[in-house]
Length: 365
Image 1 (cartoon, rainbow, N blue to C red):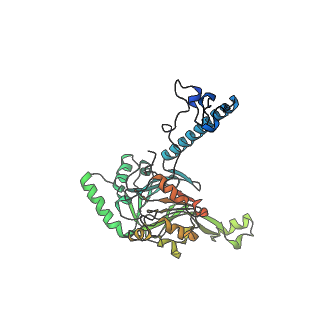
Image 2 (image 1 turned 90 degrees about the vertical axis):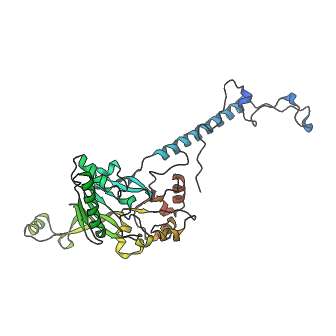
Image 3 (image 1 turned 45 degrees about the vertical axis):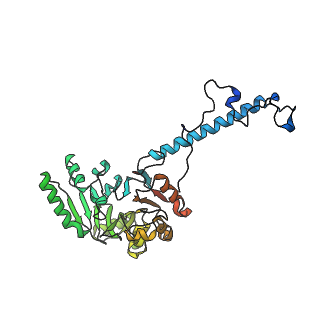
């Protein structure tokens, strides 16, 4: 079902045309009826009163005001259609494109990272860390260009995190590219398995989690790291705490807070796994919703290792994230289809869901 928007300016009929008279410019309801026109048989000889100048003026103003409002609504709709794929989510600027089967790349500049790289958008090139969810080309195809472009710009070799099972093949792939291009194509490939932890910087770590696609896959949770004074030392004063610390006593606990989770392609099963609890309570969950309606139902989505919007509705109770960025919609949909589908989610869920629609066509383009 598609949303209807106001008529475009070219579709709005003008209130006045050049050379028109006052009466011809009025709609039939406002046009004065002449006493000589006769009217119906029962009104022969009777005079229909003309509208007063104030009534005519009010009619003009109402029609003009309505036309102006419709044109403004149309302009707002067009502006929304052309807005780039950049969203402010819980204090993070997230941008990118994700069209099912074509390309996925989600960039978070403040974390200096990108998730998947189906092609190689310019913004991704400047991120030092890249997380690959699986080896389908619409998620990994842009990797050689990403590495080569960073070298072109004299940026340091990137760190690329991958499921362990694809590391060896990826290294072979780069050997082929090096042989063909005679370029060094330097990168650091890190095989990071589910449950392992890697420190990105002193206040950020990442851990993969299990997802369910048709080939080996994994998601990633990025955690913020902070140190909190242990409870048993909370009553001590500054000098006493310093003395303990100087003596080598560990006085703090390390607190990990899940900030962002990215699933890549997956069935909805990942939501129900206890070990994935951090992904479901991270501030931001970036996940997929390839299919949106009854034309391609839940079973079809599951057969292809994807998630249907209906399953997100069914599992709403497990979604404790503050915001959910939906990605990877099928290219068969238009922007209006996506927004209409999302608007049908439960009110509490719909309020925190943001569809990433960059790369999709609109009914109005």
